[in-house]
Length: 377
Ligand SMILES: Nc1nc2c(c(=O)[nH]1)N[C@H]1C(S)=C(S)[C@@H](COP(=O)(O)O)O[C@H]1N2
Ligand SMILES: [Mo]
Image (tube, rainbow, N blue to C red; front, top):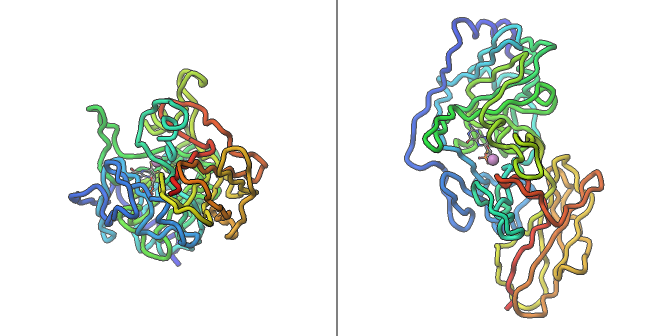
């Protein structure tokens, strides 16, 4: 156990950002075999068929990657995490060993991109939106181990009047349209930071892999993926609201149904997916359709499946439902040709997935029932 005194000793000197990063050839370090991933630029989407027969947790070798630029290779020997700002009584600086020596906890949490399902705005609703054209594979459940952010904030003497925390990544600065937006960073209200946010250094029982934020990342359960900043270098805590392009320009619902500057996106919406290739070819005969449903409150009350868009059958749960619910439903595919499969989840509050997702220019929060095409032959 590390003592407060040794932590304070470690903060001596001016605040500096010590993480050193070395650029590497590809934007993603781990292998991206085509049977597991669809690559979109610097990002890799998990193929849902690669989760068929897989347990609750998504193995690291098939967990989606969303990189604004590229995965940095950070040296844990020189890395430090710096907490600073007007919202703290004292700054706090930890090295990797000190972070790992603090009391830890383990949570199973889904990480999901705000834009997961984005391409369905076009294919299902005929609406053009900007951003990575994900199908439904920008999501994964993993077991995260680390230190509660509240533990670090308390060690740094978080003030009662602190309002926002701003975690900053050590990946390269993000340049888009000729404008440098700086390090990837997004403010989070102190209330959420003190609730269930983790500074994670392990994923599925392994040291956090480079692509998923080594040496440490935030895990913000229930919130859109951008909240879970990877390659953490610093966390500013302030008594005044903080902002970055990732909460003023991106991750806002913008469009005719929203105020001029849009509304902030924080939590996710309920979704479902079949563990099948998009456009899968299935032989005529008996099948067991499997899939998963997940909601931001972590509870899925029921899932109904339709193979004709008219009649619905309740799917049978095949997991505990922690993180997401796995389910299955039998299907006797008798008619050759194109079919559309639908799965509709109902969350813990009794809210079922809608038929239409609210249009927004950047295609966030596609929570409508997905129409999954398959061919029976
Ligand atoms: N530093 C940093 N953190 C980041 C990102 C990034 O590009 N840089 N991408 C964010 C986004 S948009 C998502 S959806 C998640 C994806 O996490 P994963 O790559 O581990 O699946 O990381 C978030 N954290
Ligand atoms: Mo994301």
